[in-house]
Image 1 (cartoon, each protein chain N blue to C red):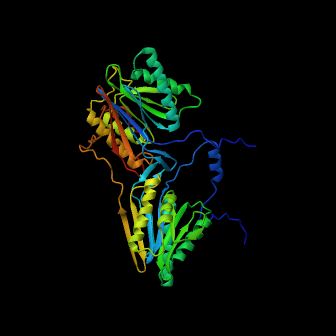
Image 2 (cartoon, rainbow over the protein chains, first blue to last red):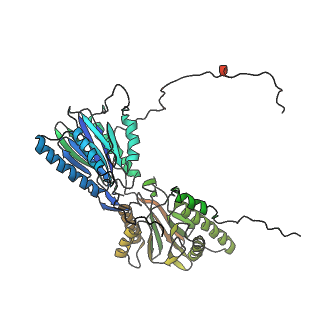
Image 3 (tube, each protein chain N blue to C red):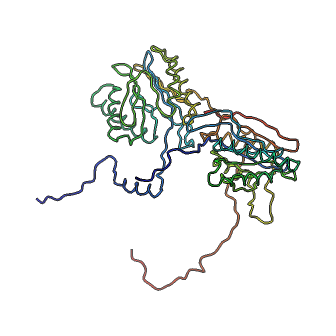
Length: 223
Length: 273
C-alpha cells in the first residue's frame, strides 16, 4: 500500500494584511478587518490588532485561531511579569517574549504572521517583524500577510530604510510626521485591496505616542 | 510500390506525449505553472421579450487580481452572446472558435444562427477534450424559434434553463435568483435582478469583483451594457500624491577603457565576401 498523506490539515488561512511604521516619537500599526476562508468571507469586521501592553501593540495575520491562542498566551505572561516586576513590560522585552513563545512551538507552529509595534524605552517608535517560528528583527517598517508582497515594495520605495548591516548604525525610524505616515498607510491598503482578494472591507489604524493610543477606521472596497 | 510505415504526426488536438515526463516531474516535487482563471460570477435569465446575460469583471491569478475590468460576455453571433467562467484562455479560445464557425455556417445557409447550433458546436468540442478545456459557459440568445438560455459544463454536458448561474460566485447569485425570479419579467425588472445577482457574487465571493456587465438580447436587437454598474470605486486617493524618482539612481560611475586590453594581430587574410 502506497504511503498516504493526511487528508486533513490542522491549519487554515484567514487572509488579511498587517502593516507597521515606526516614527521618531510615534508608531503606526494597521490591519484590514476582513476574515475569510477559501473564497468566502466569514466576517467583514474582525480586528487583527491586539494591545499587549501600554506601549506595545501586535498585529497578526494568518490562521486566526492560532493568533487568538498566541494573544492569550502573551497576555497571561504579561500579567505574570506585572506581578513580578510591578511595572508594564517594555516593547523590546515583549518582542523577545513573542519570539520565544513562537519558537517554543517550532515543531507544530502557530500559523501566525506577526508585526509588533510600539515605543521603546527612550520613547522612539519601534517595529519588530516576525516569521511563523519566531525569527525577528527590529526594523523601521514592515508588512505581513496576504497583501504584504504588494505593500512592502511600495514602503521600500517611499521609506527606504537603511540596511541594518551599515556601519555606523543608522536610525531605522522614518522622518515622516504622524499624519503623513497615516496617509501612507491608507494609500498602501487602498492599493493592496485593489489587487489582493483577501484584503478589504475596513482598515483599522492604531497610533501609539506619548499621549497614548488612538484608533481610527477607514472604509475599503468590499468586493 | 514499397509499403513504408511513416509516422504521420497527429493532426490537430492535444499531444499527450509529455504526460509521462510531467508525472515524473511532479513526483520529484516540481509544481506545474498555474493558469489564469476568471474565478467568476456569470448569470443569465429569460424575460418576456428575450434573454439577459450578466457577468462581473474580475480576473484572478490565485489570490491576486490580474485584471480589474476584463470582458466576460463574449460575442458569438449578432443574436447570441456567451458568458465564460473557468480558465480565461479556454473561454476566449472556445467562444472565438465557435463564433467563427457560426459565421461560416451563416454564409453557407443564408440564415440567422440558432442558439442550439452554438450549443451543439460548443458541447461537441468540450466533450472531445474530456474536460481538459476548462470552460464553463452560459449561452443565451434569441433566434427564429424564440429566446434560449443554456449552461455548458467543462466536460460537455448542457442544461436548458429559465435562469442560470456559473462560476465561483454561482451560489451567491443563484440564491438571489431562487428568491426573486418569476416568469414574464419586464426588461427593467430583469436587468435589476441580474444586477442584484451579480452584485451578490461580487460582494460575497472573493473570486468575483469590480464592475457589472449586462447584455440584453431581444428579437432583432441587442444591447451590450459594458460596465453598467460600477459599485467599487477606489476608497482612498492621497490628496498630496506620490513622486517617484524619474530614473534609476546612479550609485557609481566607472569607465574601464577596453582598447588597451585587446591585442590587434595584423597577420591573416582579409575575409572573403
